Image (cartoon, rainbow, N blue to C red; front, side, top):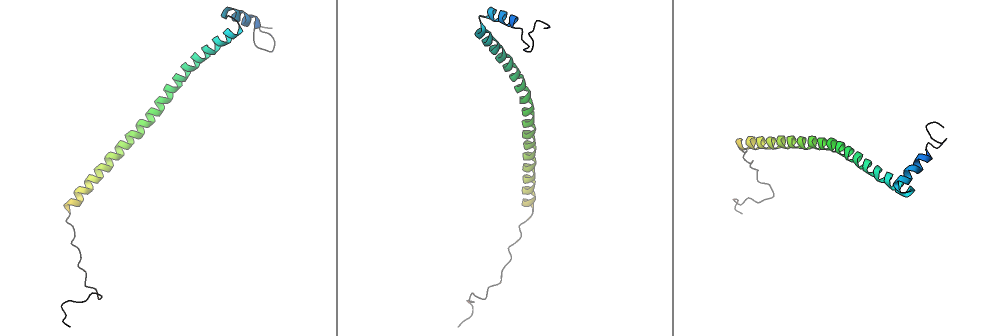
Length: 109
């Protein structure tokens, strides 16, 4: 038995019962450690959440920035196409020959 621990369990039951007596019994000791664990866990969760938020936020910034660049390029190309199309004159429509099925009104019967 080294360090005041009992063999095999890893707990020093004398110190554990002494601490439980200071806290108001085994149930109070258990509640104390659960609350302490919740506080530590919350702090760790906030730290992890901030780190993940930075990563996700940076990714969203890149995506949104890329979408803005793509939208600007698309708008610029559309504006160029309008300028190019308005400067050329439209081609006249081709005249079609009269079909054989429609009667010619100039012929007297």
